[in-house]
Amino acid sequence: MKPSTRPVEELDLFVNANQQFEHALTWIDSIKAGIVEYLITAKRTIHVRFPVNMDDGTIRTFHGFRVLHNRARGPGKGGIRYHPDVTEAEVSALAAIMTWKTAVADIPFGGGKGGVSCNPKELSRGELRRITRRFVAELGDSIGPYTDIPAPDVYTDQQTMAWIYDTFDQMHPGQNNLAVVTGKPLEIGGSVGRDEATAQGSLFATERLLKHDIVPGVVTLDGIRVAVQGFGNAGATAARLFDEAGARIVAVSDSRGGIRSDNGLDPGAVLAHKNDTGSVTGFAGATDISNEQLLACDCDILIPAALECQIRTENAADIKARLIVECANGPVTAAADKILQQNGVFVLPDIVANCGGVVVSYFEWVQNLENQKWDLEKVQRRLRKRMVRAVDHTVEQWNSLNTRSHGAPAGRESVASLRDAALVMAIKRIATVVQQRDIWP
Ligand code: NAD
Image 1: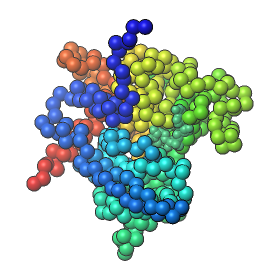
Image 2: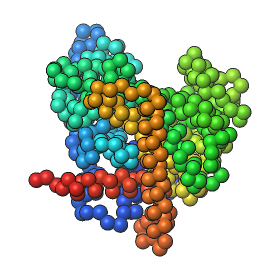
Image 3: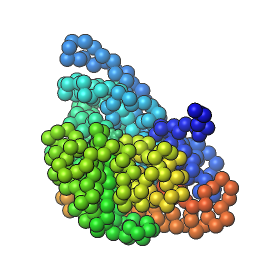
Image 4: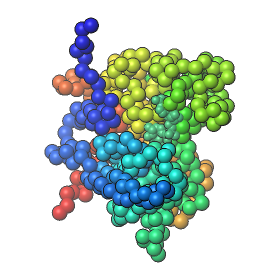
């Protein structure tokens, strides 16, 4: 067989996030020399190696790091993940995505991300507690309410955030330290609405985008067919909220596979089935499908809510949805972006679609600093307002890029995507602040 001449696509979040950033830059006519170089590289990466007493009496050394990508607009903000495959490149890409996301959401934060290389599935609660406390002690004053504020991410949760807060509080007695971390349990300064914030924000953002009437044939969620990849915090909640908003959930999946029913799935019943059996597959009345079949299924809106680089060169042309709402971070590769655009598929990018999570984290931070407790109605009202504004500004920027693009210079596509627009907006917002603050000294 003749070997393929097509270049192998790199399914790497860092590579794709950089390509998408560079693609957006082609839409910026002028930017002060040196600012791009400043924005593309992380401000600081801290590596720590620390010993932990294990339950079996041995001592194990763990490797953790925290990347502060940019803090021009405010303290760093971003999750901490515990995973055996955590790498500096992946965490750096996620930290940069946080910088763009907080700028798009227009909240006074920069971007950060952290991780510890470990396998939480093989660690006891006591071991996880000791890892967390020692990691926070090693990070010292590089995190703090006004410097860099962690949050939950893959395999870290409210309990991890409670340990982070408590450790930091022990190290800084006599002051209110609640705002050092978000995603805490409600009883110690967590915010109502945080658990659902990402999916809730995606719903608000999608409803607003449809009001702009730019996705042909999809102007309301009523009766719209939605497929969701990933049935965890973001995906299962999105399925429920989109269903409640009038959409029909025709397919969902998790790491073991997917299910499909053209009559519509009841997300609550699917979640109960997953809780009982460990997977959405085998759900009564639905047909089992593969994850590839889920991505390519006949639907109007596709919500990837699992992992990065899921929609790529090899499957982008199979997508039948007219709109992709990126609940996950980086689910579409840079090469797939082009194919989708050529095929008229709109993508509401991650930095807009899933910024509801960090918006409610910001609300938690504000409540902690002001010793306040907001109710759910207030959190949701303010979240909706932020999401509507983020979408409106993105669409405004998109319209402006595309109006201006007649006779586009070489090296630029003829039509800007919503991702280009959101990134251009974020880059410009950060560049403005950098120039207003001016470079110290
Ligand atoms: P989670 O761990 O709760 O859920 C992930 C889901 O994806 C699980 O159901 C898992 O079974 C499924 N999955 C794993 N591999 C899969 C595969 N190959 N095919 C299909 N499904 C697969 O995680 P989460 O918090 O829901 O996060 C999901 C995505 O959303 C991530 O990209 C995350 O960065 C992003 N995100 C989450 C939040 C949040 O607040 N939870 C905020 C912003 C972005």
